[in-house]
Structure formats: C-alpha cells, structure tokens
Image (cartoon, rainbow, N blue to C red):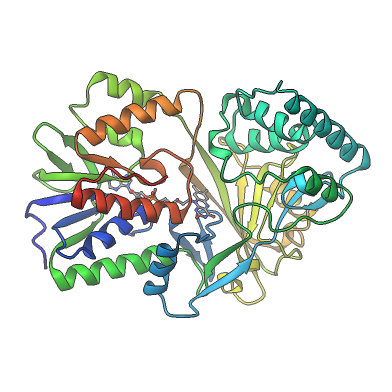
Length: 453
Ligand SMILES: Cc1cc2nc3c(=O)[nH]c(=O)nc-3n(C[C@H](O)[C@H](O)[C@H](O)COP(=O)(O)OP(=O)(O)OC[C@H]3O[C@@H](n4cnc5c(N)ncnc54)[C@H](O)[C@@H]3O)c2cc1C
C-alpha cells in the first residue's frame, strides 16, 4: 500500500462525488501520479449519502440521477452490472388550492380555481405585451418570473415557493441559477395546460435513474471501491477517511489534517469543500480574498426522514407545496420510485421544511401531508427524524458573480482548483459534480485551465 506519510503531489479535499470522480480519473491516467483523497467523515459520499433506519432508506432529500453526458453514462455502466439501475419516468406535482397539478405549474394551470387560472392567464398576456414592447428588464428573480410568466403565476407559485425554499425574499436573488432548471413553456403550452391539455416531459429531468437496491449512496460507494481497487493495483494513491482539513499554509505549501501530528506537503490541490470554508482555512490568504469570501451567502435547511406503515396513496416522486399555510415546501416519496427503500408495503419520504429554527410543528406537518394525500393519516407515521443540511443552496445574489470570479482566479493562480457544487459555489447536479471531478483531474495532470459548468 501507499505510504500515507509520503509526499502527495496531488491532494483532493472531500470524498463526495466530485472528489471521488477526480481520484477515479487520476487513477485512469496512462501514468497515474501519486494522489491523496482526504475525507473528514468516516464514509464517502458527501451530500449523496444515504441513511438507513429500521429497514427504511433515506437520501439527503431527493437525489435522483439525471444523466445527459455520454461519458458519465459510460462511467456508471462501468461501475455497475447491467440492470442495477432503474430508469424511472418522473412523476412530479404541485399541490395548490387543494388541487394536485401536473408539473410544471406554468404549463398546467388546469385544476386551480377558475378565478386563479383567469388571473394567471390575463397577467401572462400582459407580460408578453410588455416583453414585445421591450419594456421588461428584470433585475432579480421576482422580476424575471413576473416578466416571463406574469404577476399571477409569480404570486401563486414562484414567489411563495421560492420564499419558502430560500428563507428570504426572491427579490434578493438574481435569475442566474434558473436558466437550466426552470422549464420555459411557450404560449401554446401555457394556454393548452390551462384548459386541461396536460403538458408533460417539460424541463431538464423528465426521467431519472435510481439504484434498484435502494439508496443513492450506491453511486459514491461504487466510485470509492473503484478508486481503492485502482490504487491497490498501482500503489499510486490513497483514500483517507476520518481526517478533516484544518489549515493550509500556502507559502510553505503544506496542509494540516485533524488527528495528525505533522503537516503534509502538497503541490496541486483540488478542493471540494465549501468555498468560504476553504478560504477560511488558508492561513495566509490576502485580506481582499477574505473580503471576497465574506460576501458569499448560502442557505441551510431542515428536513425530515419520514417513515409510514403503509404505502403512499399518491403516485408522485415529489410534489412542490407553495402555500405558506403548510410548514414544508417540497415532499418526496422514495418508495414511489424504489419500493425497496422501505419494508414491504411501507413508505419512506423526505419533507423539506420551510422554517429553519425552533421546534418543528410535527402535528402540523403530518396533518398537512394527510391533507394533500401524501400519507394516509398522522397515525400512519412510524417515525420522523429531523435532519439538517448546512450548505443546501448557494445564494445567487448581486455579489455572487464578482466574488466567485475573484476567488477562483486567485485560487487557480495558487494552483488550487475549487470545484464541485460547493467548491465552485454553484447550483448543480450529481452528474455535473462528477464532470467537474473529471475536469479537475485533467487540470491536475496537465495544468489545463478547462472548467466545466
Ligand atoms: C437538498 C439537495 C438535493 C439535491 N438533489 C439532487 C438530485 O435530485 N439530483 C442530482 O443530480 N443532484 C442533486 N443534488 C446535488 C448533489 O448533491 C451535488 O451535486 C453533489 O452531491 C455534490 O458533490 P460534491 O462532491 O461537489 O460536494 P459534497 O457532496 O458536499 O462533498 C464534499 C465533501 O467534502 C467533505 N468535507 C467537508 N469539509 C471537509 C474538511 N474540512 N476536510 C475534509 N473533507 C471535508 C464532506 O464531508 C463531503 O464528503 C442535491 C443537493 C442538495 C443539497
């Protein structure tokens, strides 16, 4: 095995999907360089981990794999046996005004009270007139959705839903993060959806992949196994779990890990840690870099791993809940995608909560879930465990673009690549993260500046 005390020219921080993909792709180089992958937890996977309790399996809320890149599809095919993954046609809904609407809201208004449909359509027509006259120049997310879909759809869905999700007014957000993820139906689709012609398959994720054995952690675990197998064969790298990065001395190019008495040298460094944490740990970061990092904002949220004794009466995989009278903004049912995620005939769910602090109104949550038909009734709940995501979504506000550009330019000048969802400080998917890990490996091997989105 590799001597862990030996110099590790390429050091990767964090064994989530980005760090694992980076190590994996380094290991596939014609002449793999020595590398060290450091993870603070005892398990790999980061946000793509799963938890198991009393026969129920939960991810860190919905983690459905959307593969668009042929290379990433080939990677998954290499890591798994044929048939290990299910292809699932997405079933998504919106619960509003006591009606279950098809997704996306803007293309499926049918089912709402007629006066709400009317309000949405009239405002939509008005927004199109404004746009055609060149009068709409949205400066923030609220203005963007109002200009694109009209004030009615903004009021009944986009603004309250995003207020609940972000825990802040969407006026404070730019529209930068939505471009790839927000379905933009045309007028025919919006009108057709309003009179009941169901508009399906819109958006980036009309189907997804999920491991049949249950638990998205199958993906990082398979990558970690491949990484360990590669390094055992070639003796060129090591995956070190249970050690956290504590500090970086850039001048000396040494880093200190928890539980170790001496620091380690590094040459190129690939970090997948949240960007503000990385900067905080660089002891000799200049003051203008610390200032840029101080401008970065993010949201944390709480959610429930919720287990029921019977299956969900509904068939959807997840459902958006914009109305403020419900204490959650999105609910997902793992077992509707993969029944093996609960004991036979039972249900496993995630419930993403809109309030961030204080005691959770569990009766209110259970009653809300029963009202929308997600569960049979409060008495059907076997257990509900509170969980927290510290870095859930990066906030795309006015400071984001400048601050991240400054930080990445400086880091790359120091031969540090900060990548992945929280390293790059972006909104992305598991596939994007694995692509970023691949690109970081290329950068570490060649110094090429390529950076995937
Ligand atoms: C709520 C939510 C839902 C999502 N849903 C989906 C979905 O349905 N589909 C999809 O494709 N994507 C989804 N994603 C995105 C997906 O989770 C990410 O793209 C991906 O997991 C990010 O991987 P990463 O390796 O970049 O970061 P992470 O998973 O955050 O990995 C970073 C690693 O660094 C480690 N670390 C942190 N600090 C230290 C330290 N000091 N020293 C050493 N190690 C450290 C962490 O423990 C972690 O393992 C979702 C994300 C969230 C938050």
